[in-house]
Amino acid sequence: MLDGVSDDSERPATVDDVHELALAMPHVTVEYAGENPVYQVGGKSFVFFRNPRPDAFDPDTGERYPDVIVFWVDSDADKQAMVQDESSPYFTTAHFNGHPSVLLRASRVGEISHGELAELVQDAWLSRASARRAKVWLAEHPPT
Image (cartoon, rainbow, N blue to C red; front, side, top):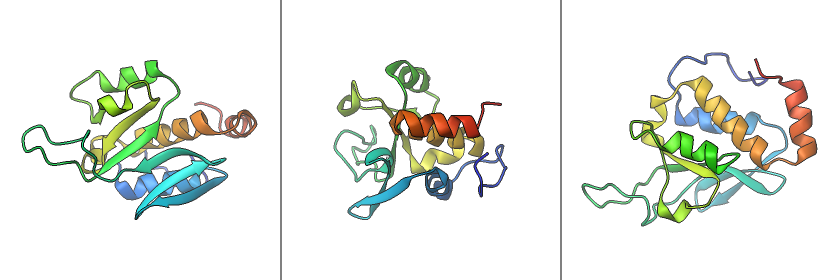
């Protein structure tokens, strides 16, 4: 578990956890797209909150989702594994075809555990950090 982040991995995740976990990773800076935070490492985004866009909308009402969070993933295979199960809270849109990221609505964050969210944020950071930074972090946080 990250230093300064509580070990309550089984409880449902919250949106506040997204912010806490992203900020707990090393060398993180925060930029803003309007009011939405964009978490970066080495100038590369790894987690960000999107403004409502026409590609992510409620199929019943047509309303744009106001609460989409984007997480980078390591590969398209990882992405596909996460979005294939329709009961999963993860999804993608045509706009993100070929883009190594998954989407998660803030309103569905509680469907995953804090531990799963921590792994998602850590993997997002690792996919965007420099090889040197990733190597150091992995040496300090070996897989359990």
